[in-house]
Length: 292
Image 1 (cartoon, helix red, strand yellow):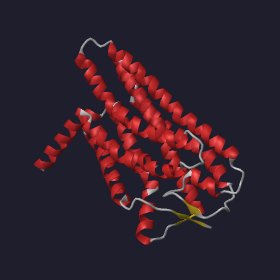
Image 2 (spheres, helix red, strand yellow):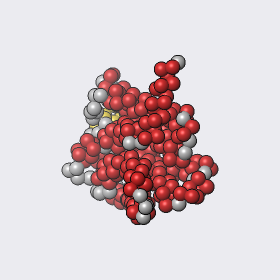
Image 3 (cartoon, one colour):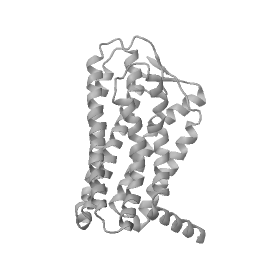
Image 4 (tube, helix red, strand yellow):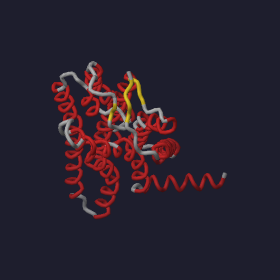
């Protein structure tokens, strides 16, 4: 049995290549520049690595359908896409929270920062974000795979989204919808609350700095992460922290492009343009390449 996928965004292939190149560049830059061998940049490169895989679940399949006009996907392929897409999304929630905690420790406890956020701790937090992201989606995905689909075979989306799959099911889905809603609130709002608490503490600590230069440097360091958080959570909260059915499903399809395609492309740009250390590292690498 196959499902027809309603496809949009014909420039998805170009966007996908840009996402891959931009995020790969960030990872290579952090790895090659010794001045960027710090916990903050370790997590930024971890986020870039995630952003390489996040759109890879949907964009290549979308591009293939646009090129070949083969807009069908198998049931197994649909559930696989569903699992990985939402696992990567959940992982990003946890990783952005870890990055906020890293900034909290750096600003509120600077003397012990490198002791607390050592290599072992950073690696554990990064791996833990991935493990939690995949575990939290496993049960909902298993529940969705057990549904019976008999209403139709056309998904009104460019990937296998939960709300679109629910519309095609003739099984009783109220319990599943409640479970997904509760888990979405737990992950999205829980992580968002942790980020708000971290930045509230950061702002309070910053207000006690004796000089305006220190305050400006702190806000400049946190601004990039805050911009990413605002863009990501503004869309995910609208999409998932509300009932999964209704007239807003069409809007969901449009807005979902932001966290799955637009945000992975913007993140490396934001971190590059808003961070002086990264800009200096980029200039240095460009100069070195010219000398070769």
